[in-house]
Length: 137
Image (cartoon, rainbow, N blue to C red; front, side, top):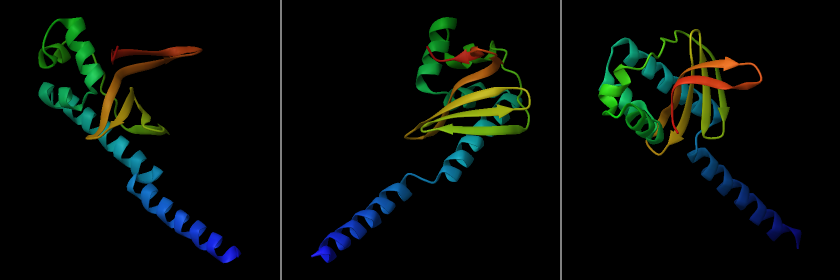
């Protein structure tokens, strides 16, 4: 009598494992988020406005264009986003990530086409939200 229940539970756990493995492990997501952040930093150093705009989350890109009343490629060049340097810490919160670099903090979100920068040029303010140079609305 208990055997069918045990088999169905094992099948459920196996199926759950397959579903979860498709989502990627925490270590894999952390690595992918860090790779996206270091890619954004590389684009900053290369002064590549087209690449930077591609790396932005849609809402962040839209807010930048609205606030600057210009295309993203023109508007991003006027932003004073600091070069961040080496990664100090990567924090994951579900589909969100905070990447703390030596000289900057980036916030990213996971989209169907990968990690995108939601906010950059962010500095912590004790007891208050981060102050960011570039962020979505």
